[in-house]
Length: 205
Image (tube, rainbow, N blue to C red; front, top):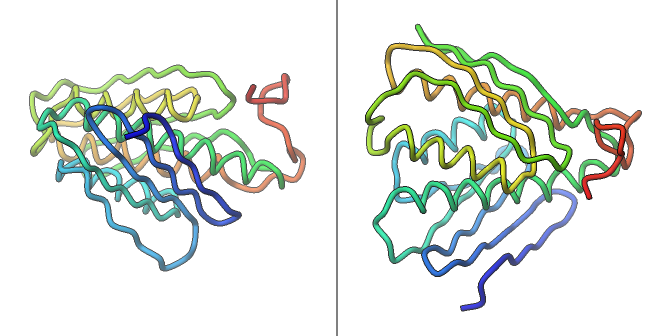
């Protein structure tokens, strides 16, 4: 098996495959209306969170994992890295016509809320402030943080998240709602920024 990325893209869709010795992950990402894709990471709550992100971002995200490990951490981390790289490639397509490149949103569900800011400009930095919960359904805080940190690495973005809540399911769902909404704003059209990024250096490289 050849290690690394295999990327296929057109104006509406990115398909990216990332192979390591632990996991083979395929991510499909598009904004074709009414074309829901399946998310299958072997971790039910992570599936739910990726679907939540997709719905709030107005995107379709498909994930398929083939792995010989039962360890949750590499599954979550590798899924995040691959999805992040998919978003980066999708961003590169959209930037030709000009998009915002950054976004901020507050996600809420019942007692929980999350403030998320994202800026896609070739700078990988992740800050997460969230109440500690040992487990959330079939994953734990560290698995979900590993996913978001992996996403940041793959997307080469700055991601800052500050959240609060009493119920672990609600708290993390607020995080992924706000992340999806922030991504939707970052992908919003802005003709002023054709072929350039939000930063003054003007390039992701």
